[in-house]
Image 1 (cartoon, one colour):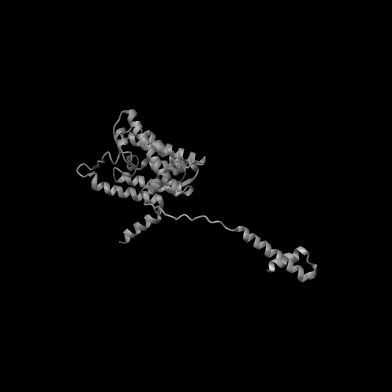
Image 2 (cartoon, one colour; image 1 turned 30 degrees about the vertical axis):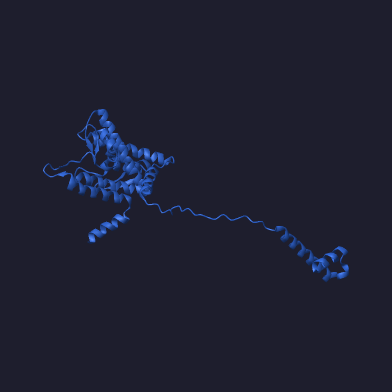
Length: 287
């Protein structure tokens, strides 16, 4: 139980990169149950879950442009990708936000998936694609593009500049382009290209991660029950207009003001100081 509680705690406080690693591991374990052929020793993923190079399959199952990036063909495939993802995410999140990390991971996966489908279409090849490698490559290249001279310490090698490490990884991918895993290397290089594009646009003031935020907010609001109070029709009896006798109020105010002025004059100068009109007015008001 302590291990489970520790896992839950790490998931809650570990950030988006940690959660993506958890999602990949969880889907790998689920895949073992449903898609692993123990007699053959391989995974056989259906076209509605992995990414097919057939454009018709992609049009019918467009979500596979994302789901493939959370599937893996074996333990070592998963282990290597998650190790590099953990390393690259620490570099990327040194300079950028969690939202930007998630946006880059998802958008690069879609971009690399489309590159894989188009590449195999023009090469007249047919295959499927799984793995987070393209998205991981995008994160590594994005961090390198932003801070190429950063020094990183590698086991048994020591300190090297980040761009040296990234250059070696890209070179190895390019050298294996025509190998059995051509589709994988197409997606890797496409992911790397997207990492460069993402950072360059970000430096020019365009944050592509806002696309993911906008889409996420749309679906959240779409399926979230509205908290607004339903509109109620209220019947109000119309009030009959009435005429105010404003003239009497005004006259009363003016009369009282004039009386006050006359009384002040009497208190200061006496009754004899009043004019004939003031005496007459005071007489009428007294009635």
